[in-house]
Length: 97
Image 1 (cartoon, one colour):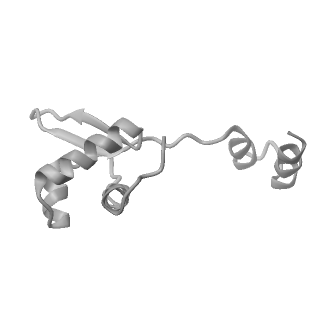
Image 2 (cartoon, helix red, strand yellow):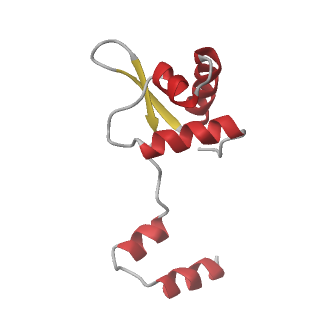
């Protein structure tokens, strides 16, 4: 996954992160929400899918929906979050790499 490259991509990701209820949003819905032309939004959505920032799927009605791609967690962060190691231990291990 690469960071978004322009302000519109950042706005699209922000909107999709805010609407991360499980259901995706259509290009038309995003374009309406952002007051932008649908083709412009579709082009940026395609780029974000290609970069791995978004997931694209066909809904039951056949419409294409976009949602934020699942974010991967680093192993060290998972170990700290689950109480296996402390933050200090993680930082020490990273310094030794």
